[in-house]
Length: 400
Image 1 (cartoon, rainbow, N blue to C red):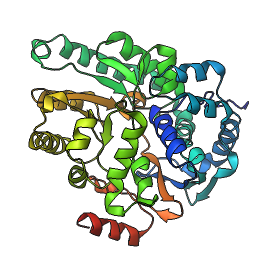
Image 2: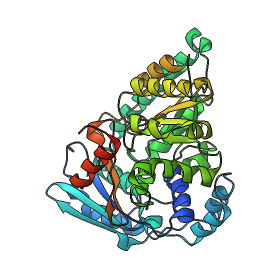
Image 3: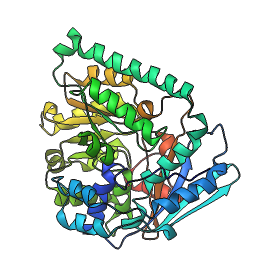
Image 4: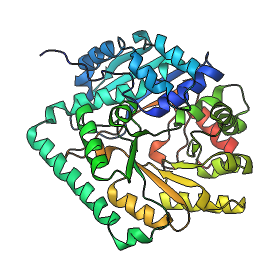
């Protein structure tokens, strides 16, 4: 079979890879990161069988460079700085920083290198593994089933938007695509995003995928991911202060842009303890990625009220395992009180009638020290060092 690269543009990744990379380049360019691939569910076929194809795709990925047209697009984004685009003009991923092996039926992928390189692999690697895994399922019948499900989502959203209930809502319904990392294929993601955006342009306004945003004239969506805050656990600040240091660095870099903060690196309660009046006024809102979304949202509202900030002036962004019905239920619940937006991922770009993979590629060490994510969903906790995890729990008063 002839080889066909699955990634053909370095823009074919999530916006927060660029926004975080810019901060890393400007504030801690010498930081070193280590990342590990995990699959949280049991695949129906062994991922180890993909090793040779993954290696070939990574070889091709590491030959890519940004084109002048791509750089011009990035330069026109208000929050992207000119010197960062100049850096990207010289940028390409270095193959020596990523290694692929197998352990039994599982695929083992490790990345070790300067964070200005290592952190940029993540979305590409996940999209490659996902598409290779689902290629044997990519048939006319499977796509017909995917289209049937996509049509159902569009119809459900359109019916709600045309209803009297929607007309009475206080804030607009806002949905974006967050599905690059676990997409069925690159072409299917584009197809799904195009169709929903064409049918519901005032509701479906954005995508985290920078290439699709550029090609389809949509808004690129994204701010920060867990790795950004986790890195500050090893960047020379007191561990108890790592969240404040990360948020302060973000504020200094973007000065009002990209104002949605991620809350679940050490859990919502510990986050809110650090999210004081200063940060609450500077950030536009918060992003939910684990735990009970209703309890999380109510906590956020109470926190704003305690700080004497009108919750209606802020936004809650939900992005954890959403489908259309969950989106509408959360929207109805919170609309009277606070603005909401929703990032829909796997259920948009990989709802084809086959079981999706739950794959991640997470930061485990920074500058040679372990880092951890203490999620509000126990299955999402990520750390390879039990001693550090216990210490982190102790510092933030989190039960094991």
